[in-house]
Image (cartoon, rainbow, N blue to C red):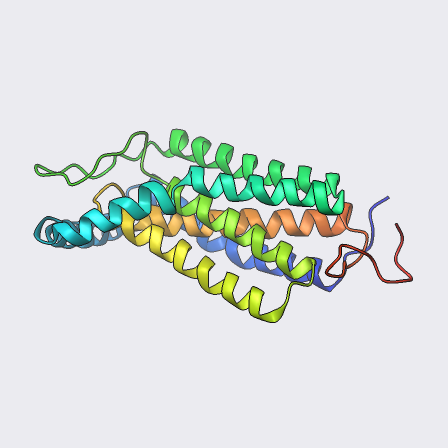
Length: 233
């Protein structure tokens, strides 16, 4: 039987409600090729591509970051580490399964939107990088947002120390924002693709946290994964 939603669940629901309108609006504008947005995307992309061609050192650094540090497979590896830790240290099988399912849902949603929208990627006579599949939304931006968002929530749930949470938050912000900027800099995504990835990824996290809080949660955990007295097992 589902538990009554607590304050964290309500917060996640409110966040999801706030994210849905801009995410849907951007999706529709891109799908309909709304001219003002397309023009803005093209202007920004042309400028950043010129900078990328003129700054090979920065471009090389961006390729390393986007391919080896903030890429989707690295993010999924972080998720896998969290899953192993949840199972081995806390025996939290349900929470681990929820984490895997949420990451998988994000990937499926990303691929489904790419197929449905079918937006072409930028094409350049002098490309500095290449990518496959459709452009909207950015899979790098969406995956980083989902994984970083879930990991931050887990740190809060298990009452990690303040210094740990602040450091993790800083790293997450740098990673999510940074990977989006590298995709535009390298000329493989339009700016609105990245914004769409951020919005959809954040929406997935909010909905997943809300769902877990209502149907999977059994109370807060301390740093050792134990529940205070008064909470059901």
